[in-house]
Every structure is written in C-alpha cells, then in structure tokens.
Image (cartoon, rainbow, N blue to C red; front, top):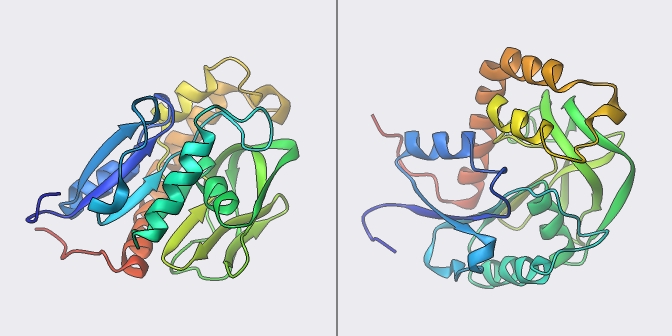
Amino acid sequence: MSSDRLRGLVLQLQDEAPSGLLEEWAVRRGIALDVAPIEAGAPDPSQHAFAVVLGSGKSLAQDSPDWARDVLDWVRAADAAQVPVLGICFGAQALAAAFGGSVHRLAAPEVGWVEVATNDADRVPAGPWLAWHEDGLRPPPLAYELASNRFGTQAFCLRRHLAVQFHPEATADIVASWAAMPHSRLEETGQTAEGLVAECREQAEGAAARAEQLFEGFAARAGIAPPVTT
C-alpha cells in the first residue's frame, strides 16, 4: 500500500454493480480505490485503510454462489486486521452472516425508492434511498441497528463496520442496467424500468448528497477521514 495516499479496497461481486457514487466520493476525498472482482479471488484486505463489499444479485439465503464463503472469510479477515468494512446490500448481508447474524428470503422483493426510520440521522439519513434486494437480515449480536422499515433492518453498525441494505452508490445508469437484467423481478413491484430510471434521475441531486453524508459518516466513525482536498 502506498504510504502517501489513503487507499480503500473494494470487493466487486458482479460487473453490473460497480462503485458508482462511492467512487465519485473517493475521488473528491483524494482516496484511491483498488477494485477487486470476486472472480479473481478476494485479496488480503490488511494493507488498506478500509474495505467495501458491494451488492450482488446472488443470495446468501438461497442458492449461495461458490464464492460466498470466500466473501464471509474475507470480511472476517478484515475485522481481524482491524480494517473497517462498508457492506452494501449483499455486503451488508455478508457482514451479518459473518458475525453471527442471519440472512433470510423476503416475502416480496424490496425495489425502488424507500424511506427508513433512522436512529442516527447524521450517519444514515432517512432517505429516500434506492433499494433493490430480495433478502433481509438479522444483525449480529452486539451490533447496533441504525435504520429500519417494514422490510426489517436497513442499516447497522458493528465496531467500525457499517452495513446498509439499500444502495447509496447507485446512479440512474446503474439502475438502468439492473432493470434490464433477466429476472429483475421489477414487474412484481408494479414499476416499470422507464419509470424507475426516470425517478432515479429526478432523485439524483438529493441522492448524491445523502450518499456523501453516509460515506462521510462511515469514514469518520472508522477513523479514516482524510482532510478535504481543495
């Protein structure tokens, strides 16, 4: 790891789920993000200031992919190395499962813009946030629930780790790629791809501001926030 620049390690679980607004935040903060596709294996997280696990269309509750165990081991390795982890969607579920919580299939997918009841609005604003998942989670023992809604826990923290079920990193272009994927289940929610993408574009400015607040809160809590670059 370079000694002259803060670096984060991003575990990307599928091509259609990139860093999005997280990458834009990192650029503004002068933070380098090393992106590791799961197909290439999970690299040692200990040489980075923080780690991120992004989302996936795969499930820990049903038909887990072959690499799921590697992700859970990787999260535990980061914890053992005292590297704070930000888990997004599948990443949040991995944080739950890795430390004694659980993941379960929802009765119906949660897709679209949602509000959450937050216990810490400075770290996790109430939204709206873009959600796209079919699994819910139960936080691990000793975790603190930060936000919830009728689908269950939407955010929790454990030590310096932060888990969020929704997608603060999502942009309209990312959502458009999800909506175009087979078996997106979007039609079950009564929404159309065109309508959801249009709403994403309408929400873009506010969503970016809320994402910035969430990423800043994670960095501050994790003790990794560098000076703001000018």
